Length: 140
Image (tube, rainbow, N blue to C red; front, side, top):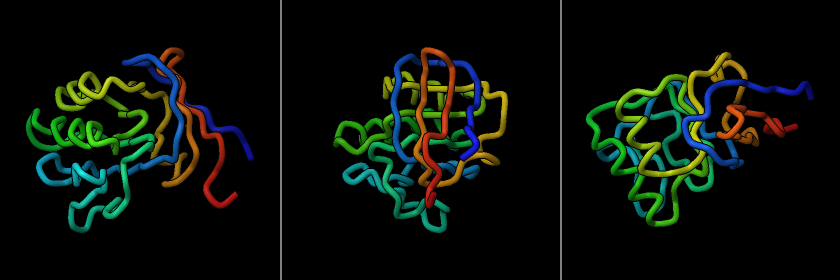
């Protein structure tokens, strides 16, 4: 496998890895995530039925109000939150979510993660060095 490394800026330090939960389409905050299971429940969303638990959540951004972070925090409190977050660019909602979850966060990416990473790829986020690495491709 050709190594896939994407450089960016670590917004919050630390290192975490897990399966990539990736979508250009963001998840709606109010009601998009089941806070008891961490599953995406937004009807028709590409990640519908998949769990945030232990994942590296890679989204284009956020949608809605700053209350967007509440659902991700509630899922984390119930033990079903993501291990790390990756956003090509931070906005006010994603920045609040990053601060509330206090997990490694990567932003300001040099390459397009949506072209290079698939759902389920094993990835590592190094918020200290600002590096996202694909460790193992899904199905390889």
